[in-house]
Image (cartoon, rainbow, N blue to C red; front, side):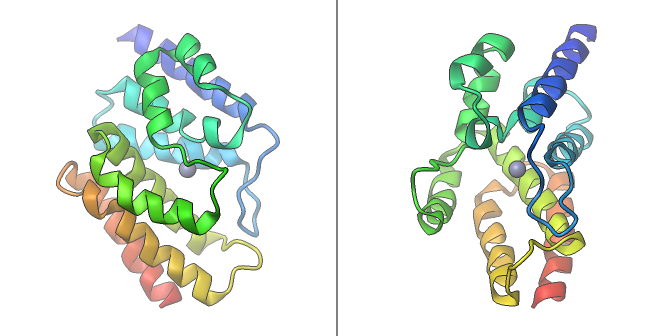
Length: 180
Ligand code: ZN
């Protein structure tokens, strides 16, 4: 439906503006928006483009965590479903990194179907990024830890979408070989 395309275009535009100065942590320092578009594209393909809320969530999934966007902004611009989905995949940045990582494993099983699909796509993109452009200063052990952790987070996201699961498994297998 064309109104869905309008909403999706608005979400892409907003995400690009919010993350305008942000770069990926990898040595290539890609614009952050590349990650957001990859996540949305993975979700679009895996769901045959049938869930615009999910795709908007993919584009906006890091706006609360990494930019000055607020829940109210998202709700007003994109509606309560999108805002709630983004909130569901947002870490509490006031917590130390190790605690946030632990909580992702502990809390993902209770999340919605959409949030779980988003996690699968997000971790797939992150693992690909790790291989194509490893973060500057990360030791082999830290890279390996990330690969193991990503699999632990998405363990409860399985059985929902074979295409996304296969994309994650392929990225995870390659990253395990790469850094193992
Ligand atoms: Zn992400």
